[in-house]
Length: 190
Image: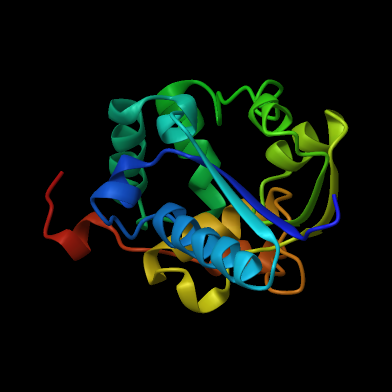
């Protein structure tokens, strides 16, 4: 591979990708990855965006919305420190995506090296590298693209081990202080 290659493997999120929800980073991350792919192609390289149908961490759309609802309705509202606990309480698991077969689509395209992996997910990174594909650089979503309410998701994921690069650093104190909107912000009652 003598041309620079930018890649995003994106998991479907109808709430954000289609309907523009600002509770997660899915839509802005997808848009950012398309921009990175186009910029790389304009410089003589190539860009690939693969869109997987794994809605809501493979929990399904209804379950994902139940999790969102639980996050907003919990005492104190949506909190980064409780992000994964809410999913665990509603769905019984934090994430049910099985990433081991995900790199197959990259191999089918003949990809052996990714210069820019537009992803912060360690599960995706580990699956890609574990399948024998070299990753040179990981590209996190720029801070200015993260919706205010999605700061909860970013803080929780980086604290749990997602790769934030030099952009995101989250320690135990910081994760406790990141809060999003609550049911009260929406005028909802118990």
